[in-house]
Length: 231
Image 1 (cartoon, rainbow, N blue to C red):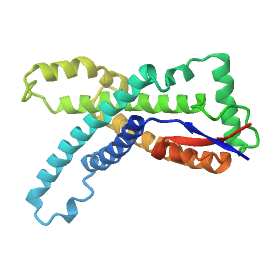
Image 2 (image 1 turned 180 degrees about the horizontal axis):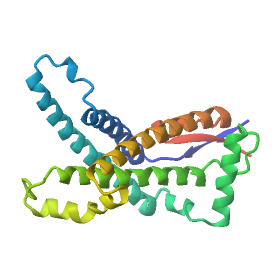
Image 3 (image 1 turned 90 degrees about the vertical axis):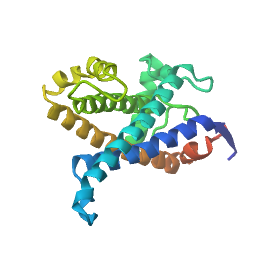
Image 4 (image 1 turned 120 degrees about the vertical axis):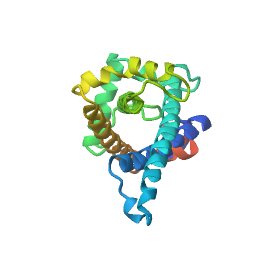
């Protein structure tokens, strides 16, 4: 059986993919510490604990910026990439809907039914990643609301315009989540766990496709290509 090589991800796309992945690890690690200082007990000098928290908050904020910028780049590529415009797979056309359910059936029947073309990004994965980016947007907005809550004076090192802008764009998350800062904090925290579950399934599904389809899908994030059987 002959195979042909299919390019599925550009070099820039792969770099951005791994920037998002490592940023996620850093954001989760520092975010969990902010919520529950799990390694403060290893610090010999109790007075130094506050500085550990301060550095964790700083790193969490810096990593979140990288995380969000990388995700914005992906969103831009959804529409303007010259390689592949993923938004086309999100349009609920008859063809896309049929492909979405064909992929779901393929997954739950362990590849006993494969009525779609796997050489390109399918509608199921497009919807799956769209959900991921919606969660990232929510994490951004709730995270900024938690950040501006700490600027109670209405001032910042770069002026009062910065807190004012953050209040303008994120205060609505208070009403949506329940009305208090703790509600926003809990929503931010639970969304993090939802993203972790998403990542677990994403890794599982890529391994699953590699095993059941036999097309080397796991290589897409590393080498940018996969192989499909020639008809």
